[in-house]
Image 1 (cartoon, rainbow, N blue to C red):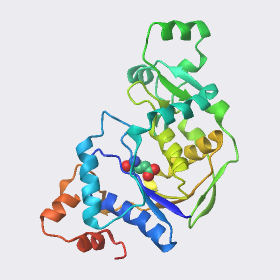
Image 2: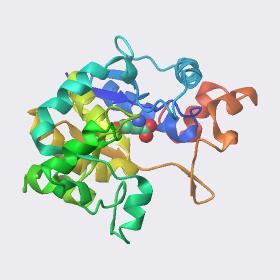
Image 3: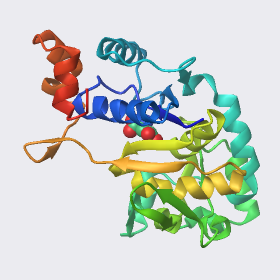
Amino acid sequence: MLTTRFAPSPTGLLHLGTAFAALTALQRAREAGGRFLLRIEDIDQSRCRPEYTDAIIEDLTWLGLDWAGEIRRQSEHLAEYQSSLQRLRPLLYPCFCTRSDIAAAGSAPHGPDGPIYPGTCRTLSAAARAERLNAGTPYALRLDMAQANVPGLTFEEEGEGTITCTPEMFGDVVLARKDTPASYHLCVTHDDAAQGVTVVTRGEDLKPATHLHRLLQHLLGWPAPRYAHHRLLTANGQRLAKRDRSTTLRALREAGHTPDDVIRMTGSPP
Ligand code: GLU
C-alpha cells in the first residue's frame, strides 16, 4: 500500500512550512487511498524537547490530520539503530577529531552537511586507534565513502524521473556520535524501511541527503522508496524558520485563525 510519512524533529513549534510538509504527505497518501504515518525524529537529545513533541501532536490534531497506527518515536528505537550500524561496521571507522581539529586541518570543500572530512582518522594505524579507544577518547563513526560507495545507484524523483546518486558529495559522513548514537541519515533510512514507507515526501532542502540515503538503503538491503521533494514555503523571500513565532500554528490559532485558514495559508487544497 502506498505509504507516506511526516517526520518532524521536535526542536520547535510547527509553523506554516512544517504544516505544509505534513499536509503534502497526507494528501499524497489520501489521493492514492494509502496510509499516512507520523514519526517523531527525536534522536538528537541536545536539540529535541518532549514538550515540542506534545505540541506537534496537539497542533496536528487541531489541524485535523490523522495518521495510521502508533506514532514512531526514534528515541525508543536506539537498539535497532545500533544493529543497523553494526551491519555497516566493516565500512565505518572511529574518528577522534573534534570540530576544531577539523577546522585546523585547513579549508576543505563543503558538502551538504558541512566541510568534507579530510580523512585524518581513516589512515590511523591500528595501534594508534587502539590506544585512543583504550584511553576512552570520545569518537564518532564515519562511513568510509571510497569503500562504501556503489557508483550508478539511482533514485526515482516524482516529476523528474531517475536521478543518479552522488553520495560522495558528503565525503566520509558521520553515522554516529558519542552524544547522538545514530545520525539523522541512518535513522531516517532505517525508519522508512521499518515503517514500510513507499513514497517519501519532504522539503527540497533534503534532496541532497537522498543521494546518501539511497546508498545506505542499498548497503543495508532495504527497498528504495520513491521521492517527492516539495518546495519550501517562504515569507518575504525568506524560508520560514522555527524561530519566527508569527507563523507558528500556536500563534495563528491564538490570533483566531481556524484550521481551514491555516490550510489555505499553506496553499494546500482543502
Ligand atoms: N526530521 C527532519 C526535519 O524535521 C525531516 C526528515 C525527513 O523528512 O526525511 O527536517
